[in-house]
Length: 436
Image (cartoon, rainbow, N blue to C red; front, side, top):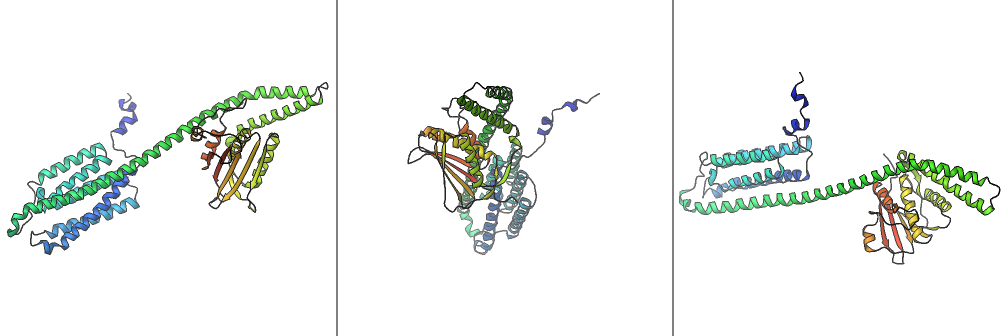
């Protein structure tokens, strides 16, 4: 027979055991606060021991137990520093160990300094707050039970703090002063913990929101890519048919010269479409290549002018600018040409191109078409949403495609209304000149 436990869901089996996940930022922050607070506690105890001859007139301080607690806390902090920096122990385990060790040290101090009459007993609340904020629920309840049991035991198991007889009447004032000091310490520790914890959580939420938006963008482009691959596959058959028809009609001798030229242009464009479909097939195999940037840009502009004889791009290059030999992903040129085509369409075929290399190894490219205007809503959504296209077969994806491509290459695209009129597109791209 097959055991019934063989079919048990693995998630249920794992959930019964304690399995810490990756360390969260607020857990590390609280651990560091506790580490520094421990050194502050050592400083206070050291001052108390040094000032014992003065305080001896009011009450006798048990120096030996306090020195033992002092050395114990110092050893704890050294051990925690080593475990945090030199080992891979999970931060949750370190926090639990630190809370238990602190409770032990505080309990030892209270046993020899008055038990429940010592105002420092309220420092247990700090450990309860920390356990509830950053530790598992089961451990938080365990700490609550342990501290409650210790508090109750200190009613019976403690050594009274010996007072000098002539100052016995000032016991209430000493106790009230100790309560104020304990409140001050607790307020500082809890406020620092909650403040840094809130800041860490807000920062973590911002990172999660950015990751969510990036994931949404990746899913969107994955759908677009799958659709594009499917449509490209379906387009191959009618495209081949159109190429054959165009070649057959060009072979007709009865066509006039103008019609022959038109069919020749049509055949060139159809061959271009076929080449683009083939590039789509092998685009995933592309990658970074080390090229001369200005020289390659000149070649890309030359090809663009051949395909768009109706448009003209004037390249304004800084004088005496040296070319840069850098690694560049092939996908960049598709994004650049999308912006260039949009600028040419919006500017009636006239585009000004500006390029320069910044000292921080960034390539800055500016495209200015002197006509058109973008509203505040369009500027806010520039590159992040599909814009309606005025082209007969335009899809309105060009700017968004360019934005996504440049973001993947750690670059950026910003659109703004130029003070001289028209729209200015600014592209920045960090360059990699060497690969180690």
